[in-house]
Length: 361
Ligand SMILES: Cc1cc2nc3c(=O)[nH]c(=O)nc-3n(C[C@H](O)[C@H](O)[C@H](O)COP(=O)(O)O)c2cc1C
Image 1 (cartoon, rainbow, N blue to C red):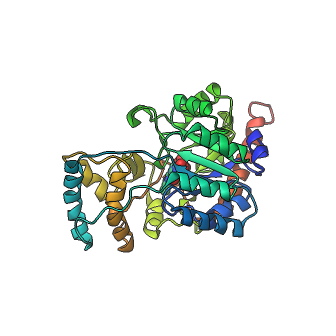
Image 2: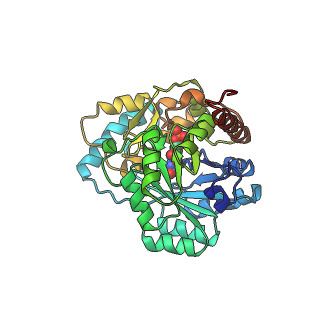
Image 3: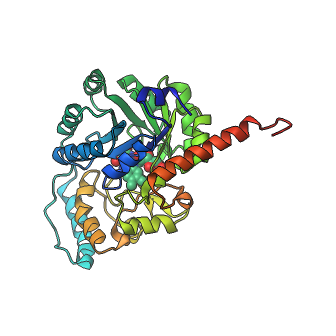
């Protein structure tokens, strides 16, 4: 199961843990996947530079294998006082239900990207991946000069081409099935909902760097299919979310294990940016909101107190329950088991397919 990419990265299997910001990708989970022969990835978009350094060191205490760190390319959003004020008043009704103060001051919307990338350089992380656009070319160049392998994120072939032009070493091609926020940056989300099965081979044909398939890949069948489509590896998020090593909230894990392929929807309600998650009361309510939902990252900062209070109250209906469409295949096994089973199942499939059509097959 070696590919050019696994050789370059020094990993055993073409399996990436999807970086999942907001808690799921704990140092324990990242290290467990790397120790099992895949590439663990820390979703660090919401970590301050100090927290980021601490998390990298915690990973290194648990593994000496390669791993990745993922950051959000910063976005500027400007919204009128009126849009923000009217959303704040709307959100106060949920704050009332959860017993937290109305109209709170909004904390800073995003973490300082340049300082975060500085930490990655100082700590010499093996792999840097990013989403929500393209960082300056000079940053990509300087990371590569320091021996860091740089991975971009694309949801259309045009985005993959732009990422290759910007100088990345590999691209995650994220299909519309994927859980959480996707990296769409050229067109509207509605024009960028390409399924993984359609996106991966078209991206593979149009770029000359390795493509990593993501979105709906849950087991060895998904891995085998990804490699058959020309991907150099498969990136799996939802498959690892309910692991014991995952930092996802217990209420989120319970929902993951009881949901189905039709339980998710794409919503802007929580963050102002489209993301796929298990349907909640908050999502359904917000569909009826008559005003404008402030853009990311403003809305994300505005709903933070609500999501946190809901998590403390074990109330999943106001939490963001990010998940992809492969939900029936999610389980609660340890991460190393998932890597092992995925590899074994894909191996078995390759043997079966190699005999396909032969008289003994
Ligand atoms: C809870 C959650 C958080 C995520 N956070 C990030 C993130 O911080 N950065 C990123 O590039 N992708 C993020 N994603 C998307 C994943 O990288 C990946 O593309 C997706 O999980 C693949 O689809 P799957 O969930 O069907 O496996 C997130 C996904 C989930 C489910």
